[in-house]
Image (cartoon, rainbow, N blue to C red; front, side, top):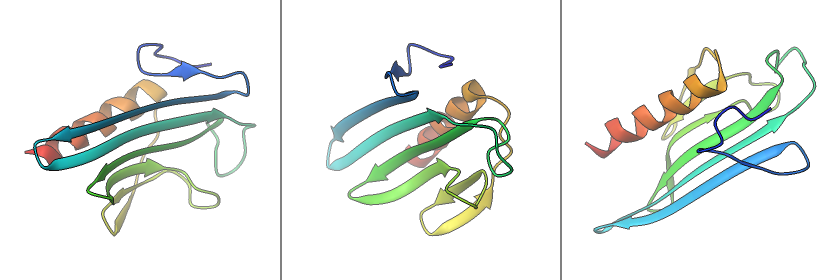
Length: 104
């Protein structure tokens, strides 16, 4: 199930994806949000696999993901921090908030 249809496009294979590209002055960026429904497992107890990335000038500035075996976490450039997943809506809000903070 995809929670916010204004953010996500639904694909038949249980995957949702949205990509934005922009050139804000000299600051080129990509915002990509990918989400899959997956079977519940120890590393994905909520039943979602996701990757939300904000890329600036070819470098990953902010990324929320739950890669295989790593659980829910956030990348800020080369640093990693744990992330407490609560819902898809909260995940997207947190990600967009971090992008906004990064742009300041």
